[in-house]
Amino acid sequence: MRGGGAISAELAEIKEQVYADPRPKEYFDRFHERARTHEPSFVYELVRLVTSVYAYVLLRARALDVANVPERGAVILAANHFSFMDHFLLGSYLRRKVRFMAKSQLFKGAMGWVFVQGGVFPVRRGARDEETFITAEAILGGGVVVAMYPEGGRSRTGELQPRARPGVGRLALESGAPVVPVAIVGSSKIRNWKRLRFPAVSIAYGAPIRFAVEPEPSRERQQEVADAIFDEIKTLYAELNRRGRHGATAPLAGARDQ
Image (cartoon, rainbow, N blue to C red; front, top):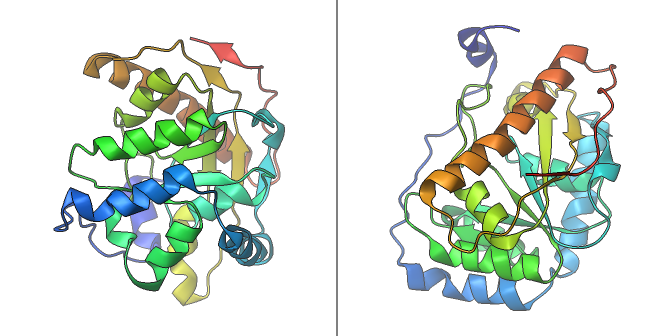
């Protein structure tokens, strides 16, 4: 595998990430309320149709072991994160609708409307945003799929971050929902579309991991579980990378309890 510097040189630059949202917490209450009480509208399927065509045709996306995602009941999809398209790649091959968290800065204008209609809910990065966890756990309580990025934001280097943030560990422990680790390979180069370069992308869904419910896990316990989940993502990612575009992943074990 190439070093981080070589990979970074191949990638188009992305804007600096803005973590602080000047709008108060109360501004986002309406978005959380809608996410908790409404299913995604027709907009979800419309956006999925358009982005899936893009993924299938230009990105030549392929998915491996989709059957690892349970067909019913609450599920947390935990994936690495390189591109805005990761949201759509995660859901393109699933029959089930996926509910996403998205940074609060995106909830404005036309895009904000699309997100709200699609069942997306905001997270105020850089703040202790309890509303995000309340919404996520409420949605999971309804037996749906919620996607979360353990790294907390997009990698700017084209490499996985060294460590997960504790949020995914907290959500897994407090909800008791099984976690499906997901590796997405190739999406880091989607940002090169302005150069008319469209990478081939692969998505691998790992075996579900189950954690016993812990209503008030310590910060250390949250981090421990987040690290365990991220280790599974790293393993999937390395295997997918090693075998290349046309290789098959090694057989995956069934659901595991931890």
